[in-house]
Each structure stands twice: as C-alpha cells, then as structure tokens.
Length: 160
Image (cartoon, rainbow, N blue to C red):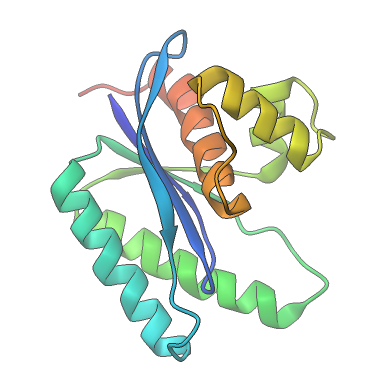
C-alpha cells in the first residue's frame, strides 16, 4: 500500500509518499509545494496541478490529510480550509479514498501522547522511517507523520 500524506497549507503544502507495513514503513518521496510569489488563487491552482501530477505519477492507494484545527488567526484558518478543499477535490477526482486525522490523533499514533510537541513527533518520524536528517520544512515532516498515521490506522481497514 502507498499512502500520500498531506500537511495542508497555501504558503507551503507538505507531502510524503510512504509504503510498506506499519512494522516496516519506507519513505518513497517527500517535499513541499508552494510558491510564495504567486497570489492566493495562483497558489491554489499550483496545489491542484502539482498534486494531480504527483498522484498520476506515483499512484498512491490512499490519501491522508490533516484535519483543520481552529486557529486564533482566522485568515490562516480560512487559507488552510481553501487548500484542504483543493486537496479533497483532487483526491476525489483521482478516485482516492481519503482519511483525515486531527493533530492530536497523529501525535497519539506516533508517540502515544496527545500532548507531544513537534520535535518529539519529528524524532519518531525520523526513527520509524530511518531517515538521517530532518527535512528543511516542518510541513514535510508533518506530512510524513500524517502518512505514517494512515499506514498504521487506515491500513487495518484498507482493501484494495
């Protein structure tokens, strides 16, 4: 099973493709999508275009995305909601099953603690995937965490 994990955002959207089993996950590819020079609609179009190309090329079995959590910054929350809309539409158009996880669910799945910090989650991601260096952007390691959560939880229910 190949899982495409997405950490939604409009400035930077993190993605990670993970395959294998919960006991032996493997990172296939990860990165970020985002060009700050583009306007809001241009960034949303870029998300759609890049995500569509990634799905066509890598052929994931499922897509996992972080649920929107309410932020004190309404502008940020609205921008993330717009990005999530593009992500969900792209997944639906590609026929992918979508799994959504709250930040606390991801923390529990990877560290057994819903109050784990970003560094603790990133260290678990690094250990589980056997990667040597942290990615440059948190968005990328967050996407890896989301994909790992799906590999563990959605993998139990996934039928190809």
